[in-house]
Length: 119
Image (cartoon, rainbow, N blue to C red; front, side, top):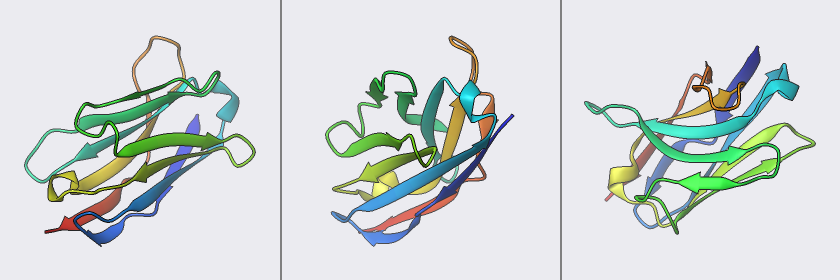
């Protein structure tokens, strides 16, 4: 089992930046893909970005392309989400998630970190 802990959320003005971190521990050798999701009040959880641990290929939701960057630090077993040019609609709880089976669902989740963007 992979244990995930997010950090780095907070309150920022529109146009500002934040960097979220997701530290993985446990069976970290079994991680295939690390992803970021978010959930705004009253809305369903939505995909934000993902990174294949082996190879480092990335994917992004259209709403964040060009503004957010997902990256990793192998030595620290940590995935980052650099968020620039933040908008009020980026507000929500951001969750880190892991896939441990290629082609399978996200089967491990962090507890979430709150991001609030004021206008």
